[in-house]
Image (cartoon, rainbow, N blue to C red; front, side, top):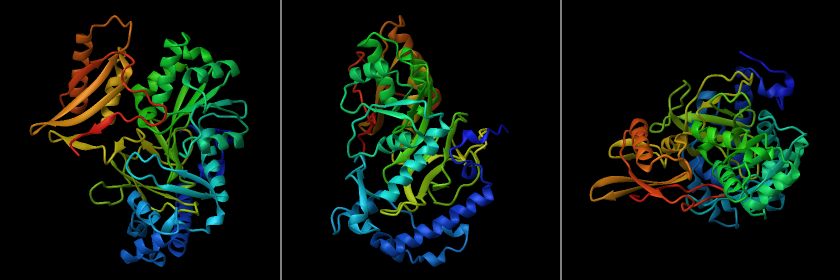
Length: 443
Protein backbone atom coordinates (compact mmCIF):
# COMPACT_ATOMS: atom_id res chain seq x y z
CA UNK A 1 0.00 0.00 0.00
CA UNK A 2 1.28 3.43 -0.96
CA UNK A 3 1.31 5.90 1.93
CA UNK A 4 1.78 9.58 1.11
CA UNK A 5 3.47 12.27 3.17
CA UNK A 6 1.49 14.25 5.72
CA UNK A 7 1.11 17.18 3.29
CA UNK A 8 -1.20 14.94 1.23
CA UNK A 9 -3.83 15.21 3.97
CA UNK A 10 -5.78 18.20 5.26
CA UNK A 11 -5.91 16.53 8.69
CA UNK A 12 -3.31 13.73 8.75
CA UNK A 13 -4.35 12.60 12.23
CA UNK A 14 -8.01 11.98 11.45
CA UNK A 15 -7.57 10.85 7.85
CA UNK A 16 -5.11 8.09 8.80
CA UNK A 17 -6.63 7.12 12.15
CA UNK A 18 -6.85 3.37 12.74
CA UNK A 19 -10.23 1.86 12.03
CA UNK A 20 -10.77 0.97 15.70
CA UNK A 21 -10.04 4.51 16.90
CA UNK A 22 -12.07 6.03 14.08
CA UNK A 23 -15.07 3.88 14.93
CA UNK A 24 -14.74 4.78 18.64
CA UNK A 25 -14.70 8.48 17.71
CA UNK A 26 -17.74 8.08 15.46
CA UNK A 27 -19.72 6.23 18.13
CA UNK A 28 -18.92 8.89 20.74
CA UNK A 29 -20.07 11.62 18.34
CA UNK A 30 -23.12 9.63 17.30
CA UNK A 31 -24.33 9.22 20.88
CA UNK A 32 -23.83 12.95 21.44
CA UNK A 33 -25.80 14.05 18.37
CA UNK A 34 -28.65 11.59 19.07
CA UNK A 35 -28.96 12.98 22.61
CA UNK A 36 -28.78 16.55 21.27
CA UNK A 37 -31.53 15.90 18.72
CA UNK A 38 -33.81 14.17 21.21
CA UNK A 39 -33.45 16.90 23.82
CA UNK A 40 -33.73 19.90 21.49
CA UNK A 41 -35.89 18.93 18.51
CA UNK A 42 -39.57 18.05 18.70
CA UNK A 43 -39.10 16.22 15.39
CA UNK A 44 -36.56 13.75 16.79
CA UNK A 45 -38.33 13.41 20.14
CA UNK A 46 -41.56 12.48 18.34
CA UNK A 47 -39.78 10.13 15.91
CA UNK A 48 -37.90 8.30 18.67
CA UNK A 49 -40.80 8.15 21.13
CA UNK A 50 -43.05 6.62 18.48
CA UNK A 51 -40.40 3.93 17.88
CA UNK A 52 -39.93 3.31 21.62
CA UNK A 53 -36.29 4.42 21.43
CA UNK A 54 -34.36 6.50 23.99
CA UNK A 55 -30.81 7.91 23.61
CA UNK A 56 -29.68 5.86 26.62
CA UNK A 57 -30.50 2.71 24.62
CA UNK A 58 -27.31 3.36 22.61
CA UNK A 59 -24.84 1.13 24.41
CA UNK A 60 -22.88 -0.47 21.55
CA UNK A 61 -22.14 -0.02 17.86
CA UNK A 62 -24.76 -2.64 17.02
CA UNK A 63 -27.43 -0.46 18.65
CA UNK A 64 -27.02 2.18 15.92
CA UNK A 65 -29.39 0.28 13.63
CA UNK A 66 -32.09 0.60 16.31
CA UNK A 67 -32.21 4.36 15.84
CA UNK A 68 -35.11 5.21 13.47
CA UNK A 69 -34.14 6.53 10.05
CA UNK A 70 -35.14 10.05 9.01
CA UNK A 71 -36.92 10.63 5.70
CA UNK A 72 -37.02 13.86 3.72
CA UNK A 73 -40.79 13.88 4.24
CA UNK A 74 -40.18 14.01 8.01
CA UNK A 75 -38.44 17.35 7.51
CA UNK A 76 -41.30 18.64 5.38
CA UNK A 77 -43.93 17.60 7.94
CA UNK A 78 -41.96 19.13 10.81
CA UNK A 79 -41.37 22.39 8.96
CA UNK A 80 -45.08 22.78 8.23
CA UNK A 81 -45.60 23.36 11.96
CA UNK A 82 -45.05 26.56 13.94
CA UNK A 83 -42.81 28.46 14.34
CA UNK A 84 -42.23 29.18 10.69
CA UNK A 85 -40.03 28.38 8.72
CA UNK A 86 -38.28 25.51 10.54
CA UNK A 87 -41.09 24.28 12.78
CA UNK A 88 -40.28 21.22 14.87
CA UNK A 89 -36.89 20.53 13.31
CA UNK A 90 -34.88 23.42 14.77
CA UNK A 91 -32.59 22.60 17.71
CA UNK A 92 -31.36 26.10 18.58
CA UNK A 93 -33.00 29.49 19.19
CA UNK A 94 -33.85 31.16 15.90
CA UNK A 95 -31.49 34.06 16.63
CA UNK A 96 -28.54 31.63 16.47
CA UNK A 97 -29.27 30.81 12.83
CA UNK A 98 -26.89 32.71 10.53
CA UNK A 99 -27.18 30.78 7.23
CA UNK A 100 -30.21 29.80 5.16
CA UNK A 101 -30.30 27.39 2.23
CA UNK A 102 -32.84 24.99 0.80
CA UNK A 103 -33.04 21.86 -1.29
CA UNK A 104 -33.74 22.08 -5.01
CA UNK A 105 -37.26 20.72 -4.65
CA UNK A 106 -36.78 18.17 -7.45
CA UNK A 107 -38.53 15.49 -5.35
CA UNK A 108 -41.21 17.70 -3.75
CA UNK A 109 -41.56 20.71 -1.47
CA UNK A 110 -38.07 22.16 -0.74
CA UNK A 111 -36.60 21.49 2.71
CA UNK A 112 -35.37 24.62 4.49
CA UNK A 113 -31.90 24.26 5.97
CA UNK A 114 -30.79 26.50 8.86
CA UNK A 115 -27.18 26.62 10.03
CA UNK A 116 -25.50 28.36 12.92
CA UNK A 117 -22.16 30.06 12.46
CA UNK A 118 -20.56 26.99 14.03
CA UNK A 119 -22.38 24.80 11.49
CA UNK A 120 -21.10 26.97 8.66
CA UNK A 121 -17.54 26.61 9.94
CA UNK A 122 -18.20 22.86 9.98
CA UNK A 123 -19.30 23.05 6.35
CA UNK A 124 -16.11 24.79 5.24
CA UNK A 125 -13.91 22.43 7.26
CA UNK A 126 -15.51 19.31 5.80
CA UNK A 127 -15.14 20.82 2.31
CA UNK A 128 -11.47 21.54 3.04
CA UNK A 129 -10.93 17.77 3.26
CA UNK A 130 -12.51 17.46 -0.19
CA UNK A 131 -10.51 20.20 -1.87
CA UNK A 132 -7.17 19.30 -0.33
CA UNK A 133 -7.55 15.62 -1.27
CA UNK A 134 -8.07 16.69 -4.90
CA UNK A 135 -4.95 18.83 -5.09
CA UNK A 136 -6.42 22.30 -4.49
CA UNK A 137 -3.77 24.58 -2.97
CA UNK A 138 -3.21 28.27 -2.27
CA UNK A 139 -1.64 28.62 -5.73
CA UNK A 140 -5.01 27.93 -7.40
CA UNK A 141 -7.36 30.50 -8.90
CA UNK A 142 -10.77 28.79 -8.68
CA UNK A 143 -13.63 29.78 -10.99
CA UNK A 144 -17.12 29.00 -9.66
CA UNK A 145 -19.68 29.28 -12.49
CA UNK A 146 -23.02 29.08 -10.72
CA UNK A 147 -25.69 31.53 -9.65
CA UNK A 148 -25.28 32.28 -5.95
CA UNK A 149 -28.83 31.41 -4.98
CA UNK A 150 -30.78 29.82 -2.10
CA UNK A 151 -29.33 26.40 -2.99
CA UNK A 152 -26.20 25.52 -1.04
CA UNK A 153 -24.50 24.21 -4.21
CA UNK A 154 -20.94 25.55 -4.13
CA UNK A 155 -21.38 28.15 -1.38
CA UNK A 156 -19.47 25.93 1.05
CA UNK A 157 -16.87 25.17 -1.63
CA UNK A 158 -16.33 28.91 -2.07
CA UNK A 159 -15.62 29.43 1.63
CA UNK A 160 -13.44 26.32 1.85
CA UNK A 161 -11.36 27.61 -1.08
CA UNK A 162 -10.75 30.79 0.89
CA UNK A 163 -9.83 28.71 3.94
CA UNK A 164 -7.18 26.91 1.85
CA UNK A 165 -5.89 30.24 0.58
CA UNK A 166 -7.15 29.81 -2.99
CA UNK A 167 -8.20 32.85 -4.97
CA UNK A 168 -11.92 32.61 -5.79
CA UNK A 169 -13.55 34.06 -8.91
CA UNK A 170 -17.38 34.01 -8.60
CA UNK A 171 -18.97 33.83 -12.05
CA UNK A 172 -22.61 33.66 -11.04
CA UNK A 173 -24.14 36.53 -13.00
CA UNK A 174 -22.22 35.81 -16.21
CA UNK A 175 -23.57 33.68 -19.06
CA UNK A 176 -21.66 30.64 -20.30
CA UNK A 177 -19.63 32.43 -22.98
CA UNK A 178 -18.74 35.25 -20.57
CA UNK A 179 -17.62 32.71 -18.00
CA UNK A 180 -15.36 31.00 -20.49
CA UNK A 181 -13.85 34.32 -21.55
CA UNK A 182 -13.27 35.26 -17.90
CA UNK A 183 -11.57 31.91 -17.24
CA UNK A 184 -9.29 32.59 -20.21
CA UNK A 185 -8.67 36.21 -19.23
CA UNK A 186 -7.76 35.46 -15.59
CA UNK A 187 -5.97 32.16 -16.29
CA UNK A 188 -8.05 30.27 -13.75
CA UNK A 189 -6.55 26.90 -12.79
CA UNK A 190 -9.55 25.13 -11.26
CA UNK A 191 -13.28 24.85 -11.80
CA UNK A 192 -16.31 23.62 -9.85
CA UNK A 193 -19.52 22.56 -11.63
CA UNK A 194 -21.92 19.72 -12.31
CA UNK A 195 -20.72 17.17 -14.89
CA UNK A 196 -23.51 18.32 -17.20
CA UNK A 197 -22.33 21.92 -17.09
CA UNK A 198 -18.66 20.99 -17.45
CA UNK A 199 -19.54 19.29 -20.74
CA UNK A 200 -21.91 22.09 -21.75
CA UNK A 201 -19.17 24.68 -21.19
CA UNK A 202 -16.79 22.64 -23.32
CA UNK A 203 -19.39 22.47 -26.09
CA UNK A 204 -19.97 26.24 -25.95
CA UNK A 205 -16.24 26.91 -25.93
CA UNK A 206 -15.78 24.99 -29.17
CA UNK A 207 -18.96 25.94 -31.02
CA UNK A 208 -19.48 29.56 -29.95
CA UNK A 209 -16.00 30.84 -29.10
CA UNK A 210 -14.11 28.53 -31.48
CA UNK A 211 -11.58 27.74 -28.76
CA UNK A 212 -10.48 24.44 -27.30
CA UNK A 213 -11.36 24.17 -23.58
CA UNK A 214 -8.05 22.37 -22.97
CA UNK A 215 -6.26 25.59 -24.00
CA UNK A 216 -7.84 27.60 -21.16
CA UNK A 217 -5.42 26.22 -18.56
CA UNK A 218 -7.83 24.55 -16.14
CA UNK A 219 -5.86 21.83 -14.30
CA UNK A 220 -8.48 20.36 -11.96
CA UNK A 221 -12.27 20.19 -11.91
CA UNK A 222 -14.44 19.32 -8.92
CA UNK A 223 -17.86 17.92 -9.80
CA UNK A 224 -21.02 17.43 -7.77
CA UNK A 225 -24.79 17.22 -8.13
CA UNK A 226 -24.85 14.17 -10.45
CA UNK A 227 -23.17 10.74 -10.58
CA UNK A 228 -21.36 11.65 -13.85
CA UNK A 229 -17.86 12.22 -12.45
CA UNK A 230 -17.89 8.64 -11.12
CA UNK A 231 -19.14 7.26 -14.46
CA UNK A 232 -15.92 6.31 -16.32
CA UNK A 233 -17.14 7.34 -19.79
CA UNK A 234 -18.39 10.72 -18.56
CA UNK A 235 -15.22 11.37 -16.57
CA UNK A 236 -13.15 10.50 -19.67
CA UNK A 237 -15.13 12.96 -21.82
CA UNK A 238 -14.61 15.77 -19.33
CA UNK A 239 -10.91 15.08 -18.81
CA UNK A 240 -10.20 14.86 -22.53
CA UNK A 241 -12.17 18.01 -23.31
CA UNK A 242 -10.51 20.15 -20.65
CA UNK A 243 -7.10 18.47 -20.39
CA UNK A 244 -7.67 18.42 -16.63
CA UNK A 245 -8.14 15.92 -13.83
CA UNK A 246 -11.80 15.54 -12.84
CA UNK A 247 -12.79 14.50 -9.33
CA UNK A 248 -16.15 13.60 -7.85
CA UNK A 249 -17.76 14.85 -4.66
CA UNK A 250 -21.08 13.94 -3.07
CA UNK A 251 -23.16 16.08 -0.75
CA UNK A 252 -26.67 17.24 0.01
CA UNK A 253 -28.20 20.30 1.61
CA UNK A 254 -29.62 18.31 4.53
CA UNK A 255 -26.45 16.24 5.03
CA UNK A 256 -23.36 18.22 4.01
CA UNK A 257 -20.39 17.35 1.79
CA UNK A 258 -19.96 13.80 2.98
CA UNK A 259 -17.84 11.99 0.34
CA UNK A 260 -15.12 12.75 -2.20
CA UNK A 261 -12.68 11.29 -4.69
CA UNK A 262 -8.98 11.79 -3.93
CA UNK A 263 -6.13 12.25 -6.42
CA UNK A 264 -5.47 8.49 -6.41
CA UNK A 265 -8.85 8.09 -8.15
CA UNK A 266 -9.52 4.64 -6.63
CA UNK A 267 -12.62 4.00 -8.73
CA UNK A 268 -14.80 5.31 -5.94
CA UNK A 269 -15.25 8.00 -3.30
CA UNK A 270 -14.06 8.24 0.30
CA UNK A 271 -16.72 8.66 2.96
CA UNK A 272 -15.54 11.53 5.20
CA UNK A 273 -15.75 9.43 8.34
CA UNK A 274 -14.31 12.13 10.59
CA UNK A 275 -17.50 14.18 10.13
CA UNK A 276 -20.12 11.64 9.03
CA UNK A 277 -21.34 8.20 9.97
CA UNK A 278 -22.01 6.53 6.62
CA UNK A 279 -23.93 3.27 6.75
CA UNK A 280 -24.78 0.89 3.95
CA UNK A 281 -27.99 -1.07 4.55
CA UNK A 282 -29.94 -3.69 2.66
CA UNK A 283 -32.52 -1.98 0.44
CA UNK A 284 -35.32 -4.31 1.54
CA UNK A 285 -34.53 -5.28 5.15
CA UNK A 286 -32.46 -2.33 6.34
CA UNK A 287 -29.86 -4.69 7.82
CA UNK A 288 -26.28 -3.29 7.91
CA UNK A 289 -23.91 -4.24 5.08
CA UNK A 290 -20.20 -4.43 5.93
CA UNK A 291 -18.85 -6.69 3.18
CA UNK A 292 -17.58 -5.23 -0.12
CA UNK A 293 -19.26 -5.48 -3.54
CA UNK A 294 -22.80 -5.83 -2.20
CA UNK A 295 -25.13 -2.99 -3.25
CA UNK A 296 -27.08 -1.23 -0.55
CA UNK A 297 -28.79 2.01 0.40
CA UNK A 298 -26.78 4.77 2.06
CA UNK A 299 -27.91 6.09 5.46
CA UNK A 300 -25.96 9.10 6.75
CA UNK A 301 -25.51 10.99 10.00
CA UNK A 302 -23.85 14.40 10.13
CA UNK A 303 -22.04 14.02 13.43
CA UNK A 304 -21.43 17.67 14.33
CA UNK A 305 -24.25 19.78 12.90
CA UNK A 306 -26.38 21.42 15.58
CA UNK A 307 -29.11 23.74 14.17
CA UNK A 308 -31.01 21.06 12.24
CA UNK A 309 -29.29 17.73 12.87
CA UNK A 310 -29.24 15.07 10.18
CA UNK A 311 -29.38 11.74 12.05
CA UNK A 312 -29.63 8.45 10.14
CA UNK A 313 -30.98 10.23 7.07
CA UNK A 314 -32.24 7.92 4.32
CA UNK A 315 -30.37 9.40 1.35
CA UNK A 316 -32.05 7.04 -1.17
CA UNK A 317 -28.61 6.72 -2.84
CA UNK A 318 -27.24 3.30 -3.76
CA UNK A 319 -23.60 2.16 -3.67
CA UNK A 320 -21.31 -0.59 -2.34
CA UNK A 321 -18.17 -0.78 -0.23
CA UNK A 322 -14.88 -1.18 -2.08
CA UNK A 323 -11.25 -1.86 -1.21
CA UNK A 324 -9.01 0.48 0.77
CA UNK A 325 -7.44 3.27 -1.29
CA UNK A 326 -3.69 3.46 -1.89
CA UNK A 327 -3.67 7.12 -0.79
CA UNK A 328 -3.22 6.04 2.83
CA UNK A 329 -6.55 7.35 4.11
CA UNK A 330 -8.37 4.94 6.37
CA UNK A 331 -11.74 6.41 5.34
CA UNK A 332 -13.67 3.69 3.51
CA UNK A 333 -14.31 3.83 -0.23
CA UNK A 334 -17.70 3.56 -1.90
CA UNK A 335 -16.91 1.63 -5.07
CA UNK A 336 -18.08 3.36 -8.24
CA UNK A 337 -19.39 6.34 -6.30
CA UNK A 338 -23.18 6.72 -6.31
CA UNK A 339 -24.79 4.14 -8.59
CA UNK A 340 -28.19 5.80 -8.61
CA UNK A 341 -31.17 6.43 -6.37
CA UNK A 342 -33.58 3.91 -4.98
CA UNK A 343 -36.47 5.95 -6.36
CA UNK A 344 -34.84 5.93 -9.84
CA UNK A 345 -33.93 2.23 -9.84
CA UNK A 346 -37.07 0.58 -11.11
CA UNK A 347 -38.29 -2.53 -12.88
CA UNK A 348 -38.83 -2.23 -16.62
CA UNK A 349 -40.25 -5.31 -18.36
CA UNK A 350 -39.36 -7.25 -15.21
CA UNK A 351 -35.69 -6.17 -15.33
CA UNK A 352 -34.12 -4.02 -12.59
CA UNK A 353 -33.10 -0.81 -14.35
CA UNK A 354 -30.77 2.06 -13.33
CA UNK A 355 -30.58 5.21 -15.52
CA UNK A 356 -26.87 5.60 -14.69
CA UNK A 357 -26.11 2.50 -16.78
CA UNK A 358 -27.49 4.31 -19.84
CA UNK A 359 -25.25 7.32 -19.20
CA UNK A 360 -22.20 5.05 -19.27
CA UNK A 361 -23.24 3.64 -22.67
CA UNK A 362 -24.13 6.97 -24.32
CA UNK A 363 -21.00 8.77 -23.11
CA UNK A 364 -18.77 5.87 -24.22
CA UNK A 365 -19.76 6.32 -27.89
CA UNK A 366 -17.69 9.26 -29.21
CA UNK A 367 -20.05 9.98 -32.13
CA UNK A 368 -22.86 10.85 -29.71
CA UNK A 369 -23.27 14.26 -28.07
CA UNK A 370 -23.12 14.84 -24.35
CA UNK A 371 -26.85 15.36 -23.85
CA UNK A 372 -29.59 12.76 -23.83
CA UNK A 373 -33.06 12.17 -22.38
CA UNK A 374 -34.49 8.93 -21.04
CA UNK A 375 -38.25 8.39 -20.76
CA UNK A 376 -40.03 5.28 -19.49
CA UNK A 377 -43.68 5.04 -20.48
CA UNK A 378 -46.41 2.58 -21.38
CA UNK A 379 -47.82 1.40 -24.69
CA UNK A 380 -50.85 -0.64 -23.71
CA UNK A 381 -49.58 -3.02 -21.05
CA UNK A 382 -45.97 -2.91 -22.26
CA UNK A 383 -43.16 -0.78 -20.82
CA UNK A 384 -41.43 1.35 -23.44
CA UNK A 385 -38.08 3.13 -22.96
CA UNK A 386 -37.39 6.08 -25.25
CA UNK A 387 -33.83 7.34 -25.49
CA UNK A 388 -33.36 10.75 -27.12
CA UNK A 389 -29.82 11.46 -28.32
CA UNK A 390 -27.81 13.80 -30.54
CA UNK A 391 -25.08 13.02 -33.06
CA UNK A 392 -21.88 15.01 -32.76
CA UNK A 393 -21.42 17.18 -35.86
CA UNK A 394 -18.63 16.39 -38.29
CA UNK A 395 -17.88 12.83 -37.12
CA UNK A 396 -18.36 11.28 -40.56
CA UNK A 397 -20.12 8.30 -38.99
CA UNK A 398 -23.47 7.11 -40.29
CA UNK A 399 -26.50 7.35 -38.02
CA UNK A 400 -27.34 3.72 -38.80
CA UNK A 401 -23.92 2.46 -37.65
CA UNK A 402 -24.06 4.52 -34.45
CA UNK A 403 -27.56 3.27 -33.71
CA UNK A 404 -26.53 -0.35 -34.18
CA UNK A 405 -23.61 0.08 -31.76
CA UNK A 406 -25.81 1.93 -29.27
CA UNK A 407 -28.50 -0.78 -29.35
CA UNK A 408 -25.86 -3.50 -28.94
CA UNK A 409 -24.23 -1.80 -25.93
CA UNK A 410 -27.56 -1.03 -24.27
CA UNK A 411 -28.68 -4.63 -24.64
CA UNK A 412 -25.35 -5.82 -23.23
CA UNK A 413 -25.32 -3.43 -20.25
CA UNK A 414 -29.03 -3.30 -19.35
CA UNK A 415 -30.64 -6.34 -21.04
CA UNK A 416 -33.38 -4.08 -22.40
CA UNK A 417 -34.56 -2.73 -25.77
CA UNK A 418 -35.01 1.00 -26.45
CA UNK A 419 -36.87 3.26 -28.82
CA UNK A 420 -34.02 5.41 -30.16
CA UNK A 421 -34.76 8.99 -31.26
CA UNK A 422 -32.06 11.06 -32.98
CA UNK A 423 -32.40 14.82 -32.51
CA UNK A 424 -30.56 17.65 -34.18
CA UNK A 425 -27.40 18.62 -32.32
CA UNK A 426 -28.06 21.37 -29.78
CA UNK A 427 -31.85 20.84 -29.53
CA UNK A 428 -32.01 18.74 -26.35
CA UNK A 429 -32.13 20.75 -23.09
CA UNK A 430 -28.89 22.06 -21.59
CA UNK A 431 -28.54 22.47 -17.82
CA UNK A 432 -26.31 24.52 -15.50
CA UNK A 433 -27.11 22.80 -12.21
CA UNK A 434 -28.67 19.33 -11.89
CA UNK A 435 -29.80 17.78 -15.16
CA UNK A 436 -33.30 16.26 -15.37
CA UNK A 437 -32.74 13.60 -18.01
CA UNK A 438 -34.78 10.70 -16.58
CA UNK A 439 -38.59 10.62 -16.50
CA UNK A 440 -40.74 7.66 -15.49
CA UNK A 441 -44.20 8.51 -16.86
CA UNK A 442 -45.69 5.30 -15.45
CA UNK A 443 -45.68 6.78 -11.92
